[in-house]
Length: 305
Image 1: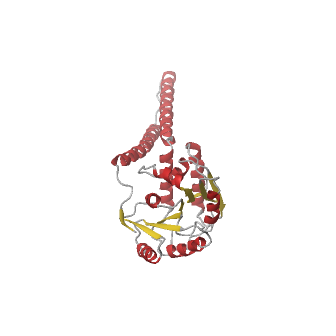
Image 2: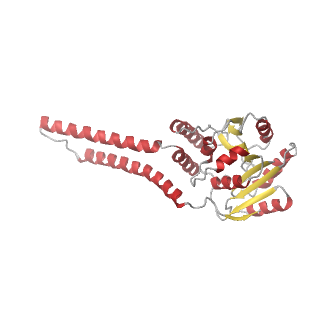
Image 3: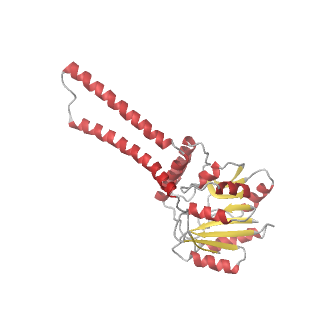
């Protein structure tokens, strides 16, 4: 059996189309499909749509969160409840082509791979600024982190039960699935495809939410920002020492200290800015530690069928 995990936030229009298209693929395969939809605190009629699907289809299940906990929590909840020998993660907007499941399943059953993922080779339809920052993120994260992340990789992937079990062992509160999928290892094959537009509805991912998500990934899988703060402090200290030496020498040679409030204020602001920047970085890591130490549940289930 293949378990398909589908996080859903305000996807009332997309879910019926997704289910219909994916069922067409199921009829082309001999395996059973188990659908696990996770309603992540949707504000539209997503839950009503899921209840209707559950009542009319034996292979449909849903999890309803008490509020919006985010896609990472929805993925974890779905993976925890999945019972299939193989487990797939997909979005409801059909940007993840269901027909690729056929080839993904063939590759897994061959025994050569443990995970078959997907990656977009184009970003047509995306705003240029979003595409630029996405490419910059992958370049940066692969230089500062020991966990390799493939440019254009989607959450859409098919995994063996062993891989899912390894992912479920990682119970940290601050989650970044793209990094977790790579961190657990296993032999992975990526299938390439052209970017697709949403079939219905509108994305809940704005530029700023994606930027925040990328910062989460950098903090969760690299301590390079902390090193950057250290280097900034060292550079600031060296600059201050050199400036003091120059001022002392000039005073002895010319009998006049460096004058001018603008230069003094500029130096103070520079050093103060570096200090605040460094404290901000440290604060981000301390905040993560604080949230982890609370041991709060990653999500709360209000209803489950």
